[in-house]
Length: 329
Ligand code: FDP
Image (cartoon, rainbow, N blue to C red):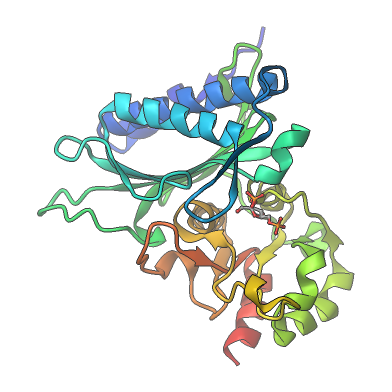
């Protein structure tokens, strides 16, 4: 009989090795409990009539699916119960949600169900999160943290039951849900690094938007795309998931040339704090990198608002570097 190491066992050893507090484990357990409930509701959602639109729009003016709401309530519930979280920034709430201002230790940024257009098809979506820690040396001012200050970021791929976590200065590890709904790591699994050999690299972007990108990005795509496979499932969590193993680049450039100018998104579409930063942080720990439309490192952008957007180019270093060159030239 083969018994695998569970995520919690992995984390306990990690904390012990680094002489760290148990508080982070309590937070990880809360996120994991939430992920399992989201997984359950997602798998059974069609029978509960929650895989459809809720008839409301969120703070960003986007249509909310009932399942988005369910997932958000689940995450908030477990974060609050953990007592470890000062405040949570979620895609579904206009303002940061204060949970335990005095006793909490962490800031959590999350998108409970990234990739909404996949929901009604039961296709892959992701619960994406990032964690920063309060200032333990001096007074805490609750400011929004930039990505380089994160301590961890992760993606629960739902309903696939795969969990990828990046721990600061430690690496990226991938866990799989077993038949008891425990996330386990395959024996001898190593820290995940993006492959350096470009042979299997992929490009991932919404190709129907290409005419709306800046001319220099269109040119870069035309020149480079024949060399790589193209993959796009419409969910950053899912697309980035496969990119991590195969290498290449996911891009969601600024929309600057839309035939209907009101649909331009010069600042990009993806949200910095709980989408771009999550992918960028995981990419960094896997040897990759991420930039915005001005060639700035995503992880160095100082957030001004909880829901600010950014363009995103994330993936294997040489590809992101080559885009950076044309963006800053
Ligand atoms: P969605 O709006 O469907 O929730 O903001 C997130 C996101 O999905 C990403 O997950 C995805 O990569 C992108 O937006 C999809 O946008 P397009 O439909 O414009 O391709």
